[in-house]
Length: 242
DNA sequence: CCGGACGCCTGTCGGC
DNA sequence: TGCCGACAGGCGTCCG
Image (cartoon, rainbow, N blue to C red; front, side):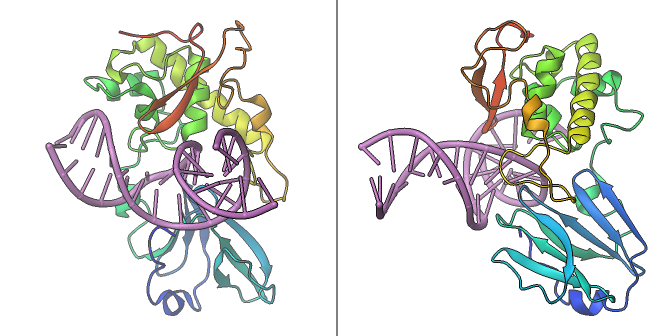
């Protein structure tokens, strides 16, 4: 995992009762009595409840042993995840403190994005992928949202109009809601808590579709690199703002 | 503060 | 068939 698991974690959590489970952005918070376990699944991590006796697989890193003979087991093949103990009040941890709003909550809208983007010359795609601006918009959903909103991924965030930000905020909410309904996006091996893959990959309109025709206008989908990340867009449906 | 680059890590895939 | 480099991704950190 990208940070070492907190030293002495065993001692801290032993005997503690799990009082709550929350999510903030892509972080999960297991609320215990004297502190919080803050964890992140990175891009390939998973959690399962298993009998403690189940032999661990190669990428199983940690078991949180429960009193009923089961355990919460964390697997994280690419070790981009995180598992740490904190006694900060929830939301006050440095990793959480400056996170932007939840996109599906009230208060995330075009006005908000418009306000945050004034004066920014950064391209709009990395802008909406910045967790300080809004959480939850990863590389796939950023491309999809910008397509739905009709905005090119490379235009400067500060040049996009209020009306387009209204469209974009709405598109982000739609894309995330639809993906949640479909069980997420399984490009390779992601499975939900029921063991089934997510089916949103079938609904992707631009991501990964380089050279294929746009579902709206049949123009060929293009791929560009923006901020070291692959970005996909339709050159006809998505407007530039320069 | 801002923006760009980089590193972390491993499985997979395309090219030779 | 085997090897190797490129790539994917979230996000913290570092540097100018």
